[in-house]
Each structure stands twice: as structure tokens, then as C-alpha cells.
Amino acid sequence: MFLSDFKIDGTSFVNEIVAHDYRTADVFRKYDIDFCCGGKWPLETACAMRGLDTDAILKELKAATRNIHISNSLPFEEWKLDFLADYIINVHHRYLKKAIPEVRDYVDRFVESHKNKFPELVELSKIFSRMEKHMIPHMQQEEEIIFPYIKQIAYAYYNKESYAGLLVRTLRKPVEEMMRNEHDVTNEQIKRVRAITNHYTLPPKPCNMHKVTFYKMMEFDNDLVQHLHLENNILFPGAIQMEKELLQDDRP
Image (cartoon, rainbow, N blue to C red; front, side, top):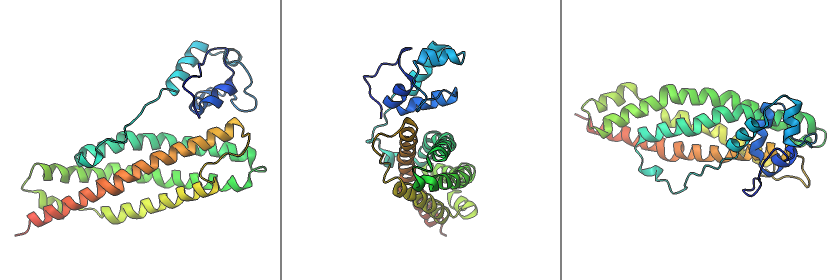
């Protein structure tokens, strides 16, 4: 829902800007500028009505629409586990901490104003509220307990430290069981979101708020899939394999 050939300037209409690139909605939402049915104003007019500097808003819109591509060919499987853990925290955790409350707010606003027309979407508010309540503490637990432990055993493993086996025996955490249970809950919730939205399929002639909400959920979904893949299929299995090898090396 964004086109590279759409040039934004002061004469561009707010609703058309968002229609061409859903990411600009965050800027307008920040300044309480209506970008949906009531957003039929040129940007410079909307800014003047709120005492905003049009050039400053244009800079924010440019930043919001900057494309950042991460190659699918990155060799995640070859990365050391401590580096991978830091990558997950700084890329996926940082994104989710910002995105979860934002997506929930978009969902809540959209559902509240469109529940009569789309009653099947009301459940989305409950799902994202539950996801926010359990995912934020879950990530905090990973950052404060699980990942530091993985980084400790990774350091000991890569440097062939003599205390490595003792470290695993004294600090070992139930990584496999805890992460599987937590991630299963998240998977079920996102699957339900896909089912309710028919995989984020928009109806004919949707309003901007409908488009933005669905594209925000899809962006969230895509990041979550990659996030869970890195943890479930690379980081945690790698840590568990290290534990096994370190315990074997520590046998008398």
C-alpha cells in the first residue's frame, strides 16, 4: 500500500497521502490530523489549522516512508548465538514493544467506529489486548533471564572455558519448555487474527482507517513470523545443543 512514485508536498491531500502509503498515518495520528473520511484537506491547510510547520511535517513524512530492506539471504544460521540474541532484541523486540500498543490502538479505534458494519472484527480488540498483556512481560523475561543465560553459555562454549559444564548445571533454565508454551499461545492468537480478517483481505472500497489498520496488522504479523523463526528454529535449538555438548564435556 505504498507507491514510490507518489511525491508528497504541501498541496497533497492528507487522505491521498495515507491512501498511497499507510505508514504516513502514524505522523498524522501523532498530531491528531484526520486522515480518513475527514482528511480531505491539503497538507499545508491541515498544518495551518493546527499551528504546525508544514516543512517539519514533510520531513517526518519522508522519514516514515523511508524504505529499509533486510535481505532474506542473511545467514542467520551461521551467526554466533550471542550476536543473534542481540539482533533479536535490537530489531524484533524493539519493533514489537512499539508496535503492539500502536496496533492495538488502531484496532480499537477502527473497531469502535465500524463495529456495526463489521461485527466480526470486534474480537480483534480482545486478541490484541491479550497479546499486549502477555508479550511485553514475555520479552522482558527473555531479555532479563533467558538471553543473558544463552549469551553466558555461548561465551563459555566458543571460548572453551573449563567452567562451562558447571555453568550449565547451576544456571540451566527450562528454555525449551518455557519458550514452546509461550510461543504456542502467540501463534494461536495470530492465527485467529488471520482467520477473522481472511488474511487481511480488505472489502471493496475500504476507508483509509480500514486500510491502515489491516496493513498495520499484516506488518506486525510478518515481523512476528520472522521473530519466532529466529528464536524457535535457530537460537533456542542452538542453545539447547550447546547445553548438551557442554554437559557431555563436563562428564568425569
